[in-house]
Image (cartoon, rainbow, N blue to C red; front, side, top):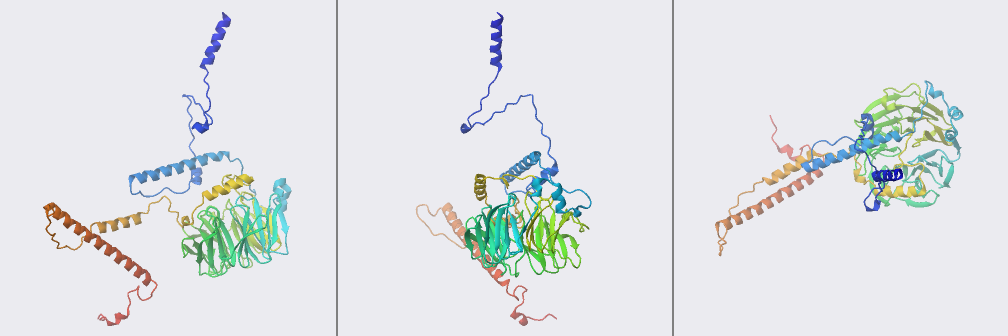
Length: 556
């Protein structure tokens, strides 16, 4: 009897057990099934507002759309953006890496030898010098993921290599002057601005293209989201080349003379050019005139740099001053005066806001320069090179600063300079060959058109002024009354001369005359607009002066 009850109990226990099998993903089911009891309630902790502000793409749209449907559509899109920002802020818990820093009051006394003696082996390998005193001074550029480096000497030496493993990709001598070097969207291709033209090489040193229309280029920049190669020439031309199609998008004659200072805002893709008259001009490929001009110095500029947030700009000039500007208001925030024997040169911002300033053969590094009204008495770090510094650049996602000078290249460690946690979908330093191919395909699919480069984003906002003007034009044409027409319809047989038919024919003739009157008004406005546009450039017409003014009566 006991055995029978035990077996029955086992059967009842098995009957109470519920088995859940995952559905086939190809048939619309999920790969895994999760079951939650009804009594279990999961409460989400609210996210800190400071973290949400970091991940928000911009401000909410202002105003209302034309219809209620479009307003609801805009609000739904904003809700999706807010959800994405909240999820990104919650995912920060997975970022376990912490930023480095130097603690103490006299950090400027710490040398690279001191860091090498106390750091681990991986950090020690990041401090090295390349003695190349025959082909300098050198320009340099890191890839977006911070893994690969290309250097170009002024006397023709070009080398590309993985600076972490010290494995050389290629090393060539182009046998002519090299003005600048720049990686393209991947580490498989890089551009070299040579004496006459710009050349494209692969990572094996094989020449792929000769861009003859980019002649006498002095500086190069690359916009990765737009696939645009930007060049500034000695003739004063600013050129945009789409490397995905090999087509020149825009060529602008700036009329500002020699263009040897060029940088790009990483947030808005606006090009910043420095000029000898002390101004900085902001350019887009859609305009033949500068979108904005900022008078920064009373003398010639030496370099311009924009931080990673896109809100602050640093400039140096021959007046021995370093200035910080707010690009949201185009106002000067602070200025720092150097001594008579010291003139600041090249600049660069790190991902965490550390500013590198070169001065002759010395590189100074400052923290939080955008939040200070006066230059600190002592820098955060201080490094002296063997020869005059030509170029400085921070390595992305690494606490490393690359320095190009007259005797080659130097790599130093700057604790707290780079972003500690990287997004593998954005820039992966450890990507494989297949991942690199997939990344290239995804970047081409997500390519942004050059028309989207504007000084003000304006995305998600309603242009109320233009909508009001259009409505006024519609009202004018809607209530326009043409001159009265004396029209008497002729008599028709078979009911064609009934009262209703006669009124219908009269109304048709009036509408036809109304359309012709509106057409004449529109043509007149177009002609007047062309004449006004043409007369703007003719002096003596815009101010109302004319040769017939002498015939008018003079007022007593």
